[in-house]
Each structure stands twice: as structure tokens, then as C-alpha cells.
Length: 192
Image (tube, rainbow, N blue to C red):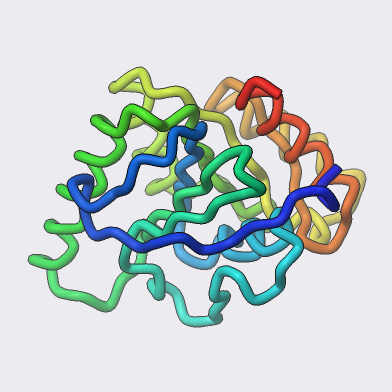
């Protein structure tokens, strides 16, 4: 199924007033820096160079919009938990992102990314608490499952479900089996 999706970068925006209207379901990606959001976008879009991946955390500074086969929009948000920027800049980001997350009518669901190699981090929990406090729709993608033993995948999923509730989908940018499952789930939420 993922083979049928192609993606293209559309635009970057700093704040809600700069975000274009696409009239498509939008999925906003939340996660710590280097959790694998860019690799997720590239795998979903069948394009290794679409979203810039980096070993240096904190590279995404804007809301980056990607059109996926005119079926849905992916909005990649700056990663939380790491940024070599001033406190003032971080505060401005937070204000702009909160406004986008709370007022963007096109958002179908948020997707929170958790790295399978690590325990859930404190800032992951804080982010989920904020999302739940505002009753925003959200599901979880557990990234980098190819780095852990297959026998540990279900245990990790159960641990995240216990902490966060809701749907938890494993994902690997290496194994297409997981890509198809995630693509099907997003299509289902999009009404296809």
C-alpha cells in the first residue's frame, strides 16, 4: 500500500497565519528531536530525500508541510526536548506551535513518535499530558523497531499503551510491513 503514496514538500510556515489551506486531512507529527519523523515522512512518500534527515538534533525549526498523493497532508513540527537556541526563541516556537495545534481546523489527528530503543521520556509524557488536557485526537507511532528484538516489540507497545492509551503502531523505515500498516491506518482516519 505504501508503494502507492508519493509525497512532495509544499511549504514551510513559522506560525498559524502562514499555514495554507489544503482542504485535505492533516496529520501533525510530534516527537523529540531525532526520533525518526523525517525518516517516517521519507518512507511514507517513497522518497529518501524529501524530508532532510540529520544526526544533529533540532534541525527542524518551522512547520513543514508535505502533500501525500493529494490524500492527506503531513505537517512536520520542530522536535521537542532539544534545541541549541535561546530561551526567547524556544518560547516563541512554543507559542506558535500551541496556536497551530489548538486552532488549525484541518488537523485530523496528531501523531506522537516514541523511539522504541528507549523508555518513554519525561518530555514525551509532558507532551501527551498537554495533548490530552486539550482533548486533541492523537495516536502513537513507535519508531526504530528494527533496532530492537522482535520479541520485545509487543512488550514495548503494551508499555506505551499503558502509559498513553490509544492506538500504538510500530514503525521501521527499513521494514515495509510496518509502513503498510501505518499507511492503512492513516488512510482509514482520512476516510478512504
